[in-house]
Image 1: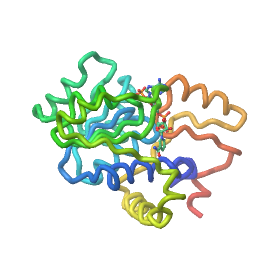
Image 2 (image 1 turned 120 degrees about the vertical axis):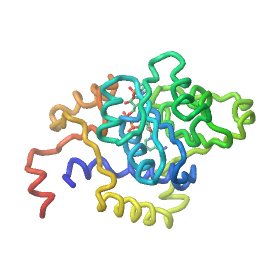
Image 3 (image 1 turned 180 degrees about the vertical axis):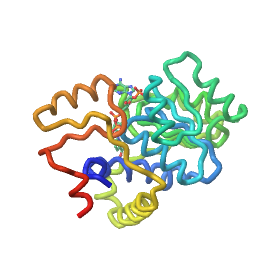
Length: 224
Ligand SMILES: NC(=O)c1ccc[n+]([C@@H]2O[C@H](COP(=O)([O-])OP(=O)(O)OC[C@H]3O[C@@H](n4cnc5c(N)ncnc54)[C@H](OP(=O)(O)O)[C@@H]3O)[C@@H](O)[C@H]2O)c1
């Protein structure tokens, strides 16, 4: 892979892998709903869930991001969560049953629980929406739901012995070509770092937004 692709791997990919495999115990054939599906952790989760044999519904706020989720992520279905009652689309896609796993980096678990299946698992990944979500626990009780957290950074302190096995699995998947890191179309030189941050703030980016410390032919370097 190129250095641009490699630069975006470090926290993003193990977070999504451990969330789906270690925390939600995803099984082949299950339905997965990924919110912010074109974002950094989201597009990795879409690809990983597909590679693990799941059926993936990608959810995002714009048509461009839904296209990215389908084209680069390989999502089976896409749903725009800017639309009112988007959960009804998810229920329709899943034949009325709902999704088995929710992967949520936005802070919209409460909304997503409207289309979770019986005994579904909802993974709390982050709060990109800007607010730490509060959840009425009756929603958890009603469908035998499990809410699970993922804090990848904490593995370095709490469970360092687990980290190599996650990277081994990821490197196998990356080497086989079954998953591929996605880099946002604009790569920012160091002098334009603030433009990159602004693009993230305005929700324009998809995949990983990369800052290049210096210009060089990364493809040539990657071959070495
Ligand atoms: N738990 C962990 O170990 C772990 C590890 C890595 C990252 N994270 C967390 O995961 C979250 C996403 O990280 P990321 O790298 O994927 O970020 P990202 O690439 O910037 O993607 C975030 C996406 O969230 C969506 N979003 C919804 N409401 C938003 C708002 N009000 N402002 C900005 N974005 C909004 C946007 O997609 P739409 O426009 O489609 O809604 C945006 O593209 C962050 O909160 C991060 O801290 C957690």
